[in-house]
Image 1 (spheres, rainbow, N blue to C red):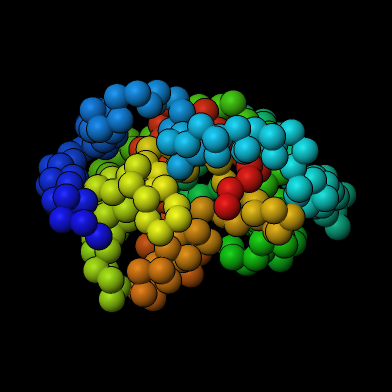
Image 2 (image 1 turned 60 degrees about the horizontal axis):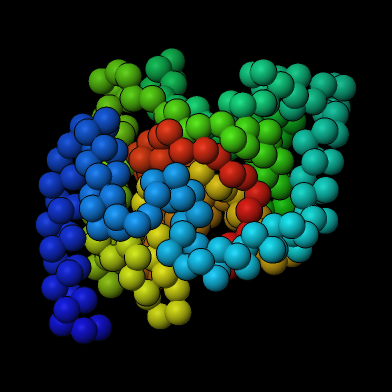
Length: 276
């Protein structure tokens, strides 16, 4: 790493430290403004494309791939899993709000009755439990990954609208924020180290995306592979940081997803996309 890059990283981390002490709405606004100043030629709406937003050639390749996705067979499996009736004859569409359409952008949400964050995956498993089915493992791409890939696609175009409306919800949000900014692992990195401070820079062969917009497009596919959910990606990131992660579906990762997704409020969802 060059001295100039490290100097820029230090300045950006100071900015991140200021952001980290803001409330939910102010938190998102300041981060959006920070990226607007850092990348004046990048439209906020284009943050949904992640690292592709910084590379026109990569974006063109992405558009070409999405015309004939290499994971079409997996999408067909996902649709079949979602539409196959449970043993009682009902389907996901029967138990999800609005038949599952245009709802995913509201998740994660804070459930006051349960006193915790509920993710979209929690909603899927609750639907299964209510219909006498066994829950899916949160880190199983062949079940939870596929079902959520189709279910979230029913909300494509919906704008993310995560809410923090009570003291208990705020505590969960703050816990997720601490997780996002906390340095950890042998490399002493945080989520913010890469996706706030170093966003737009190249790490090895990859450009680092901005934290805003990252939560809109999950699960993602890599070629013809099974889909990866956002929390599966968290565990990968922790592994790269040489830190032992909690399992997907844990309170720790649910709170992180709650905070992280709030940063994408107002941006359109784009489920089942290709990423490297």
